[in-house]
Length: 112
Length: 115
Image (tube, rainbow over the protein chains, first blue to last red):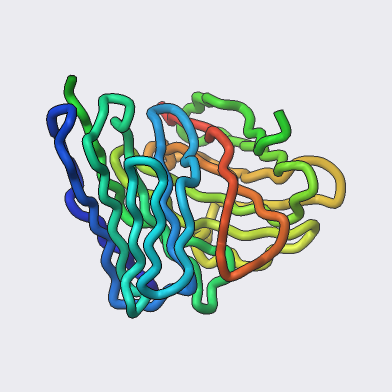
């Protein structure tokens, strides 16, 4: 069974601060995805990383896939109240195809 | 909106009743996945279906739960004789094909409350 551990579970920060969320596993994944989920809604895909060491940027969000494809991080620069939500990492493969393994999530609150 | 459609959005059942949750995948998608999410937790995989076939049901409880994806119509997740522990949000996701990049598109979920 592949497991993904996210840390921290909860994070409350002031607007303008930076933060990093971590997603770790002892398993290798063929790809890793980050989702954001608002209350009462389904997860929305933010990014997919595929190559070990890959870095992707989405405005103020920077995603990194570990060299060994076992871990990933999400860094948010100058957080805004609109960033508030549940951030989920999810790993695919290497043999599971589309059956994603989800981390437990990081609930972020950005106070104005 | 051609996204993944789930209904009902909210469902209340008493213990022992049956719950049926429906999912229509995105247009052109033939792969459907069901996930369950308990409050303040991540999503747990339940079952993966392709049209008329169950591909992987390793996350599905052995009793009371069943899923289907008929040739015509939506995918249905059925829970018989519900218990309080079944209260959760059930999410459906779809994809166009099975790939290792694993990109899924999720519906807004069906929230089941068992009284």
